[in-house]
Length: 347
Image (cartoon, rainbow, N blue to C red):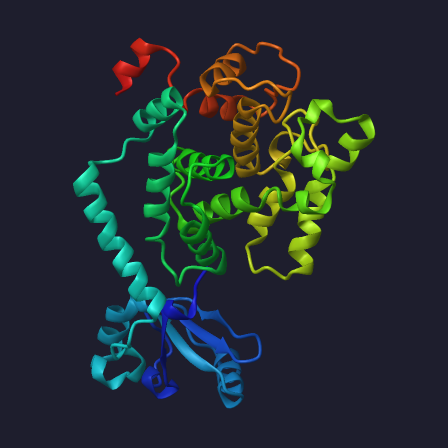
């Protein structure tokens, strides 16, 4: 997804009456406030497209080229950069200055504390029941995300800055979901932002149900109370719509589906397998193991390592879920190495 910061605008005369260009042409529509591709590179500028460009420009629209194709545009059109006003160096926004500062701080953090190794840090956190370092480093990384990428990414930065500061249950879920997504080779900031924001907001619907239903262990609830509790994903979805919160559709889907399970035993839609977004399964699985460990499911606190071992061995314990799909179970089991020899070898 492109933002306005990914483009520079040009005048139609900059096309110099050529009909084929080695760069893509976009048009900014002032009504929809969006940039749309209007001509692919090395495709002829037809009369119909040319007429459409004139039509939109007459109504306040603008032609634009991706900044990453700047050199291609300048060389192809034999134009000096100084002839394109939109390519002049602009003053950085305060948020961009802040991002540059956090990028520099990250380098200092790494120099001071050494390279961050997730599995090693996770092993130490589980043994000490202290996730401060992992949460802190997640915050350090997230604050370097681009503020121009997408509304969801900007929201992820804001949430990390304001709330990812202490060792709490929700922050453990956010940080471990984030690093687990990275371990799945998901590096796109939009995707990671979806995981971060969904992890923060997945229990938004709890604000609409009784305190008892959200504070006592799930298995202690009556059947009626469980039925009410299971509505929290629907209520979260409703609040997001009513509040017109500008986050991606995928992020909303993760929040809505984080209690869905692979064989159809989840809620609210009883979805199965591929019909569930893998990131919803990921966030749901990470949330479940931490909540089970904390006693929120059956009222009995257990070490996270023992929870993961029980999932690995498919040991039936009331309230403990395994139904996340084989791939997700592998990810959960490998969050920490339960075998000492295996850990030393992988380290």
